[in-house]
Amino acid sequence: MLITGSGNSIPYISQKQIAELQKKYKNGTSIDWEALRAKAQDSVEIKGITQFTLSAIPSENYNDINKQVTGLPASVFSDQFGYDMQKSIYQCMTDYYAGKISQSDMEDYFEECCTSMRIYRTQMRQTTGTDEEDNQQIVGQVYEIFAKNNAIAARNANYNEGLAMNETYGGRSDDWAYYNSDYYYQCEETKEILQKTARNMTDKWEISAIDTEEIEKNSIYTIDGGFDFNSMWNISYRNQVGIASMEDESLVPPENFKYFYKQNSFDGTLWVSWNDRQENINIPFSISRTGSLEGQIFNVNDLLSDDFKAEDDYKNDSRFLSGFAVFTRQYSLLSGINNQFGNYIPSYK
Image (spheres, rainbow, N blue to C red):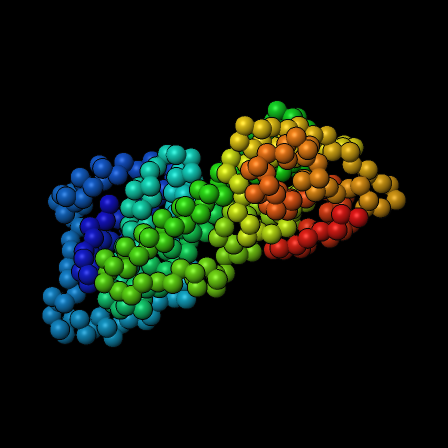
């Protein structure tokens, strides 16, 4: 646990000690937050950590420090220290979705990443530690990594749940698609928590708030999807696996909705669950040896029975359910749907 100062007070800790702290998540070690907090109370005696305030440094020394400042890199995650922190953030979000750490643990670790990053960059003479724009960049880029790994962790949790379900069906491990709307909602909720945590961090440092929407909009971390569950899902199952697609990534799914689709040798299997209703459907694919795409793609809505669609809740969410397509891998390769990104309506003929 780092000793944190308020406002412009910057705690000092050696690079070796920082690296040791970062290894806790890198090595998958479960952090005992309360024990660390208690240890921080006497960390000066135990680890020789001291704290100084920049304004209290003699003026000639402070001026010397200012002269040596080279400026922050474009990304504070662009060196080994930042790379190790990225891995620790990934582990943190993975643990959060697995229920191994609490929301407050995640929020505490967000703050610790901001603090240790500011300490490290100050020690590297890349910032004074009190520059508002530098501190905004640190908080903003820490938020960016946390928010991206939130979407990754949601996608991975969905995948792992689908993988377990696939084992009951047998066959290959790369011929199925799974969607659980619980992870959509958890991803959105967690992103809001991270946004609030970032605001708390800028308030604590007494700097202007960051614009999280602009950070996400201009992020370089979008090649595998954005900062939301649906776009990450589409990249996985439309562009990588190549057997399922969502037409409109902005649509909000109904709660308690799940579906599992698996392509077999000559047909497909579809399982849909919504609230108290479940349906198992055989998909009659017509796989042509001539290259014809007819009969190789179906809309999920068209496959559902009238009884399943008769309930009132279906009428309210039919647009979302009508936006899923399932198809063969041959269709994906021949139609080029696996090279379409973002919102896309495929041809069903």
